[in-house]
Length: 342
Image 1 (cartoon, rainbow, N blue to C red):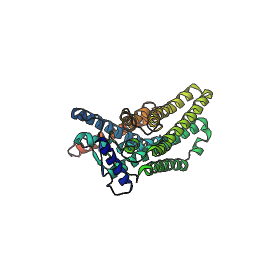
Image 2 (image 1 turned 45 degrees about the vertical axis):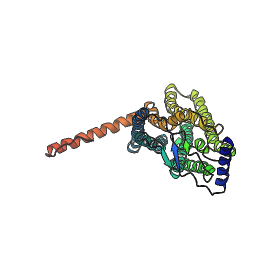
Image 3 (image 1 turned 90 degrees about the vertical axis):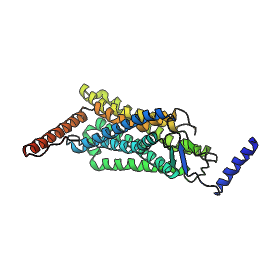
Image 4 (image 1 turned 180 degrees about the vertical axis):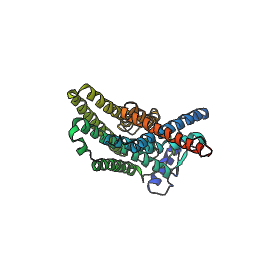
């Protein structure tokens, strides 16, 4: 019986290589848990996380756009990072929340490939944007007299666009590595999203070379960018010895936030991709951390350690409250009904 099964599987995979067997049309995601009670708890938790991510990051974007005091390049890139966090989280969280609520764990193969592309697109763009932010931090601290010349508006926009282009090319390379290969199944992935290494288990050919290509594309980029970031922040911190105490503290506030975000993002990224093409039980927890938790924490990290951002947010809130009160008083004076604002 065992020999018969082995022969059948080999014939199926060989036949699929010649294109006579149907391609996998849908994928079953086992998710984070199969327990209905735990799914309901996780649904409420991840829904809250997603709402906080959207509100926190969009508040930063709105504050930077509206506030006239936050017109420096550092806040332009901070708003860009928040926008990327919104898009990156939205490529993962809504599907995860929906699956937990409806207990639906199937996804079409095309949707799986689309999710794979978008998550690597926005994640890769964020990697390159963090590198751009490190350069901006270096220019602001080490070249203060030439900062506005180095980081003029045109340069900032070009660097922002370059980070998107870099993320797009990285995502295309990742997707082209596996797209078109024979996916003969079984079409079950022990994960809550479509990612590279879990998808390799669905391929019925030798994936050794493919695994190396995936690690070289994703893992090598993460490692190189992380090392560049560590070197750049090391140079920045070394230059602070020539600054006054007040200037040193202000620089540490800015760079400290950047370093915290970099460590959170890249440690998980390097562990996930700088390794052989294998999956481990901890992978799902790490994926939750850098796709759900990190985008939610970024607004807290940047606002709590940045007095200018906190002050601008307070002014924006007071302006909103004062404007609302004026509208209500005017409506009451004219005899119009006043409804509570949503």
